[in-house]
Image 1 (cartoon, rainbow, N blue to C red):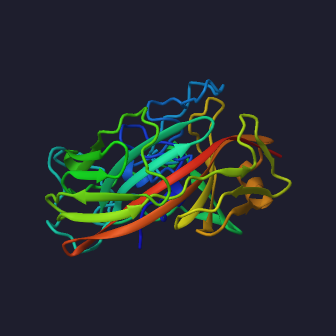
Image 2: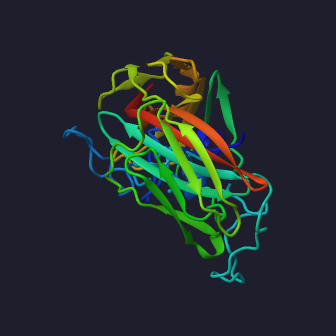
Length: 352
């Protein structure tokens, strides 16, 4: 199963989307790249939301997840160049901006992208979001260097691929969440069909408890027939170590280990994403690591931290630990993906 949350999201999620209904990525920027065409850091208003007055600068990222990394999911996490017909979708000077690219009415086989339901809960932010985008092909992940369970690859505004051409699956209703989520298709002219969400940007608790059932129904649209899927909500991620604080730091001279609770899910993703002093997304190297569903710890090799640091003596970042649950549904002769993610995380400084 190829789903942006697992494929591209691993290389694109940061901490949030920049529009309502996006995904979040304190988790991998559920794929902000596929669902939204890009990812930044912060909530979808460009702020890093605070809980209980915790002192994080308010001038934060613009991001997740229509977002992960992404902080109101994106992602998702909304979490992940996007292509249509294997070519960039950016219209040229001769293109008619109002005309949609010609797309088969009922594409066959696996459709990339999908529906993403995400929730981020940490001492700094508590947000939930729903997002959708259906595309023909997942973008290829950026080239990176592997260090154990981790890949270090380029991320940031300059590496954001163009937005993928979106296919129309009609209105999508999600029940089992609080409240019921409704994703409505919107015409994006030459970029096909996008989706807006009824979930407010400030909404906190969207998903049911771990194991709770969520039903997703697509009414069917111009390119994708009706579909229905049932997915279990993943277990919340409770980080046991390190403690999430605003002054958390890691040294590039030693390995850095994350430990968390066991719980229902299909996989775990740990990401460490570079940001500026104002928590805006910046160009740089991002660390993305994967662990199995049963894992309760992951060690980021010191070599990966050193690679991300490069020649700098210190780097400001945001880390996320995300648990995901995935499923697929038949839509005529096509297959669409549905994912649910839960994440936690916060600021992290990497020192030489």
